[in-house]
Image (cartoon, rainbow, N blue to C red):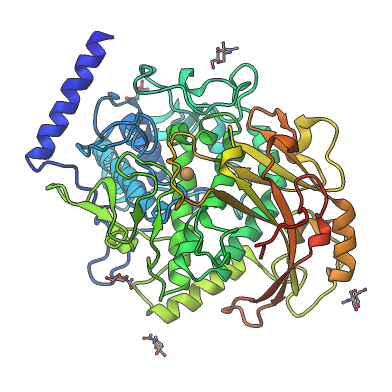
Length: 598
Ligand SMILES: *[C@@H]1O[C@H](CO)[C@@H](O)[C@H](O)[C@H]1NC(C)=O
Ligand SMILES: *[C@@H]1O[C@H](CO)[C@@H](O)[C@H](O)[C@H]1NC(C)=O
Ligand SMILES: *[C@@H]1O[C@H](CO)[C@@H](O)[C@H](O)[C@H]1NC(C)=O
Ligand SMILES: *[C@@H]1O[C@H](CO)[C@@H](O)[C@H](O)[C@H]1NC(C)=O
Ligand SMILES: *[C@@H]1O[C@H](CO)[C@@H](O)[C@H](O)[C@H]1NC(C)=O
Ligand SMILES: [Cu+2]
């Protein structure tokens, strides 16, 4: 124990001295591989494409493995880089703070922008390792591997289109072409194994639900662990697929309906008008943490970044942010909002704006920190995504190009992604959940004071099955809303801090899949009134009684939508009407006197 403490002290002294000497680690993204004439940048690719890239994939696996095998005390080891997000609650790269808390901001306008230099740091670490590995290939292959290493960028997992984990993340070993031939290596996407398991100083016991494993005591990261602490990928995939159509619809709705940064950015945004706070990028992202983690590391936010799937998930979250920026070229970080939580450097209740430092990410070696203003574009970090060729187009061309791509990806004509529907009530656009002329939504509010540990609100058409073990993928599940109150943060009782968490679940996919092709209110209101039900369940599968979450309020709105006519346009969203009768009087529904709905 003593020697570990001494080493850690020595280590932080070295870091502090380095920082004082102007040797902070500069996160620059990667400029190698950027075309100097056209400005074209290498792409982060979707995992299912990336895995077929040959040398790039070989290098990525080996680079990730090498970073994971690095001494956990090294600044750029996987352990330290993952540790920037949540635990350990201590300085990284010499950036000290005032609170025993994580650096990562949640429930904050900094949520999208903070994770951008964070992903760039990870990408830089992978890239640096890849250069070293590429140099080891025999002369006959070296040029090819070196070229691939230069343009290497991290992959993302588009869970809105592929609501199944890439199979490669669930196999313990993986074949790659290494410098000495085709070999099988421990798969760095499958798990991270601590070496050693950190002490309680680094890994304090926080966040796991009572009946689940204590994630801080597990040697390797796990996903939806069973009673033997083993991951259950098949169950995760069933829950992801059961939520696939809703994830797809939420993503499309967010990108097409929300031009303002504040309500787009996080779960706690509240401008007082009540508009746009239910569906936001942080909420959609929370769903993946919960469905994949489900009691393992990913659903325990302070521990989530140690699971290697975190980086595939957050690269996609960053991509959704980049797509949104491309669609709305006039957008900017206009909002100021108080932080809902303490972070290591920011107190709960403190105002955050475009110039708030994104600690601990340095943009140069003399200690300048990135801000939301300086990290606004992907160009700054030397990468892009397949849908975004901003070097070739002006901003209005790009916007219309990206709209076309988003329509094709997330709201194609005449499809329904949950289960197939035979009825073809062909309108001009077709039977797509996002292209009907009315959108039905369940909106959910919960006070953070009710949240002892993360849980799901499962919505059903009809009754949930008797066995709670099948609640999360029942055939009549509409979708599950994920409720995470990041328990790593101490929340001050500042009255300026919004205390309500919001959520929004699209009902159209389930209504269409159940055979309803006419979604008019005269048909849907009585149907939902008799059939819409909900159940609450913790990530250790234990059901919660609605009475244990007294602030829960579910209500239903129908929103008029004018389907798009052209492929480079979005639907026009009209007024949303609240149908109080759908949930009024139900436990967890609306009660007399509830207002402020939208
Ligand atoms: C190839 O290299 C890896 C990593 O250095 C090593 O573990 C493995 O034993 C080598 N395989 C052969 C066939 O030499
Ligand atoms: C699972 O992990 C917990 C620690 O959270 C440990 O107490 C328990 O013994 C483990 N169970 C098995 C079967 O290894
Ligand atoms: C966003 O606003 C800031 C000032 O608040 C300005 O400096 C910056 O150039 C703007 N960015 C964009 C992309 O318009
Ligand atoms: C973008 O380019 C198009 C086609 O050349 C042109 O019509 C349009 O005016 C340009 N828009 C802007 C904002 O420069
Ligand atoms: C849907 O149902 C409503 C009410 O029954 C009816 O007025 C309307 O014509 C129907 N629409 C279609 C397209 O069948
Ligand atoms: Cu996250």
